[in-house]
Length: 225
Image (cartoon, rainbow, N blue to C red; front, side, top):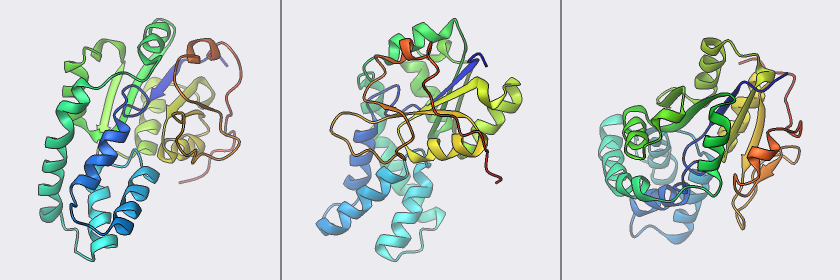
């Protein structure tokens, strides 16, 4: 089938902001034992695409034995936003990301899907001058699978007409569940957490050319919810 839509993650796919957000989680817990802090960072990296409030609630419960109640997580999430917002607005593009947007915009629908809170994501996209590239911009709270499913339904896309591009297992699993093709982004020197059958790129520089070739894995058998 002809490719009709791209589902693009934001942090780590469009902007080089994934690492700074991971560091921001660690910075919320100064003085933490290094081994525990390393485990927190590993958890955050393994759950890219999950909204920050869910991550923080889990961290509070699993690593500190606290309740992780919404009223306790909210101040942490506010401090997190203060740490990352300006940095994300000013951070560089992933190499090739802007070229991909320019290349693909005229050929297919582009949808931005992120675990960043929706209003914050829209604000950053507007400040970066990116809103015109996307048919839709979707932030949290919907999880990636739900966001992907809504895009397929609302756009009238068959799963085989869509490619999802992300840097986290969250996006990969959402694509697999829905029978959508997936391309992983793993920066040079980073640990590749994707299954071996998933194609990956270090940057987006080659993707405009790859889009012309049938080189993406498709999970034809979508799993039930």
